[in-house]
Image 1: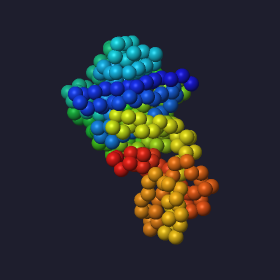
Image 2: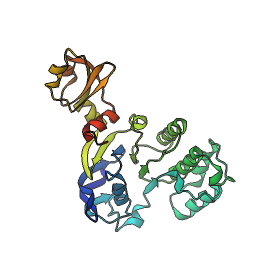
Image 3: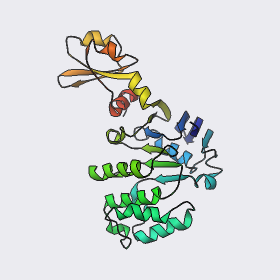
Length: 284
């Protein structure tokens, strides 16, 4: 696999505050990467740097380009979805399609119209007449109809109900993603997307707190439900977090094998949300 994004000592300061502080990470081709962090951790600044929207210090390569200096060339191969509210409320669906067709050489109108034909979104409708879920469907159809190698999603389903959120990600997987494309997504709804992620990037106070594939996470971390009678013994294995759950204590371990942990209680696979809170040390 080749790296789609390579960052080395990526830094960005606003006055005296470091939004990014010597971040280093890779994003490989054909992966779905969750960039996850609390508010103010540096997620948006990192995305802006990757999209060529802000200058930065350090080294950053996206699809072989310097994103800030070569933004025009980079945008030929990158699509971006932020909060769906960025679509103008006055524009008609047909006008939005015509606009994207006119500005992006890799937009395929027939593909966009085929996606929308399975929804309630009609060409004559204005954005202000659409529900939030319908706007998300329109936005996704516009983006998926672009033959881009990298898709960046910044809280793409913010404010949508669970039905539309599920449909959004199902459509993304079934109609867009393949081994030649890469998706980088930020979201606070990690429980809903962890089943589609291949890799995790946790960011905390402008630094990368964890960079691992989901396979590595499954091998490295485990969670054990421990009764009071075995709790002190289990604590000797140095859990990175613990919390009360169903009358027992859930201990999360780094580097303890399931075979070792099973001696103390019921072993469970670690969810992304639990791992995130543990790695962030309670700052999430």
